[in-house]
Length: 75
Image 1 (tube, rainbow, N blue to C red):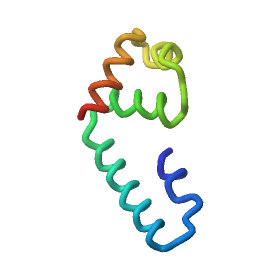
Image 2: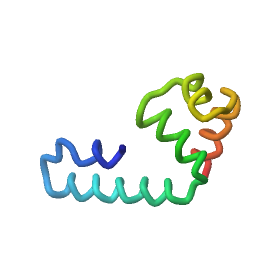
Image 3: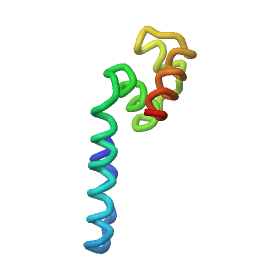
Image 4: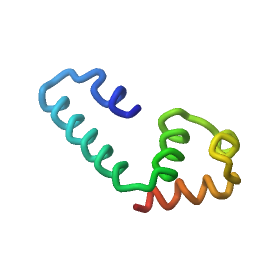
């Protein structure tokens, strides 16, 4: 999950603070998405799954996965 990545390699207090703020902003934004949008983004961008694999995992078409991700990123 993103929270595992954002806190790494903080060499200064100000960098750590900025990273903490960025993490909170991302988590807040993710909470506003639908469950399907959130799941599609997590699988695609945090776990690096290709759209075809996400589609199979979610029982959707590849186009539906692309649409979910696009709408989620817009939101």
